[in-house]
Length: 136
Image (cartoon, rainbow, N blue to C red; front, side, top):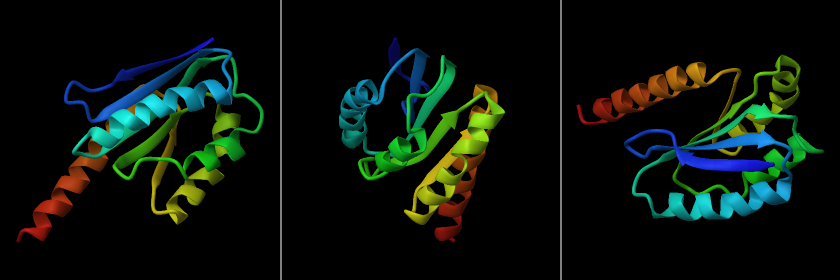
């Protein structure tokens, strides 16, 4: 029925799209136009979370559509995260992680919001540590 867009962090480094009920790829593309415009104006990297926790399922051809999405992502994308509670769907989508890695992007598929928050925190600490090593 809807896709809700909101900042996931007070420092505005993460945008979360919450999928509720039935939705389609056209609805997602329309929301992403707005999200990408916001991201392109940001001076920093922005993580993007697709939370499929409350959706009734994914529309047809999820791998093809999510793979196509990588061609349109803003250059300041940090990490793209898919929250997918269903283990079979996570396994089905897992090959996308390699497709994104081959394109120089980071895609993570996680079962819960808690896991995502921990994982993004670890990635950000790792990036900060890498930057501080460059200054030495």
